[in-house]
Length: 320
Image (cartoon, rainbow, N blue to C red):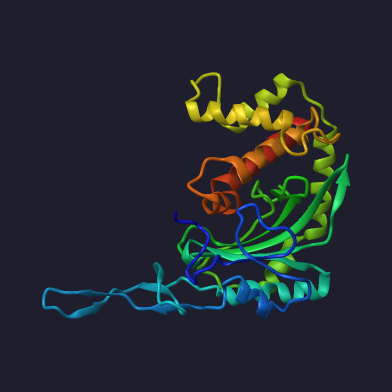
């Protein structure tokens, strides 16, 4: 079975600390390992090379295609994509090195790093050491930095919460135009890690997120209100007949809300926080996908991430 996780070197390109990730792959790391050791273990010890693109004309001459270039992995010569000549590469090494000063200045610790889709997407994440508890529910903060070489998204920095009881992930905060606290750097711009760090605003974002979590945990809902929330998040309206997939997901959400991991905690039982975590658990762990790697890709960077942002925004709107 093909996996979205990168197996180009014969092993999964992911390294992590703590418990094994829910997708079941990776190399376990211990505290205080160097960033070079992280880069090697995560399968990121290669570079992106730029190559010209040619075509063969009618006279069998090789001609360069103008304003285009190919991005190729240095270790195996595998093509990653064809991009504009204005595209500026952010190397896998730069993704890892971004965390050097963050770790030194803020006491963060590397928590995971890796690659997807044959190296077309790379990312790294650090534990911010800012856990808090509400109603027996432990939530931690992580900083994610990712880039894509296939044109699917810009270089992205984002703070992400992790709910320990079920390993749900959720971006915070929503004070930047609904982008879940994301900072996006288009590939036509140069990568300046100092500008990113200056713009992240961790302290204010984390305070806002904790406030919203408390707000959602204190907002009690009836079964009907929870159902209406799920219908809204899944895009089911009274004017349109829901398809089978939507109804199936809503049924799963109800089940997770009532009996999923962490559902019986005081912070979750019959609350909007519990309803939101039903959505995040479905997206991170249960949603239909060809394999666990594909689900991880969606939950972190694709449609799943968008659904979680929508669910969080709707929950906060209801509770406000």
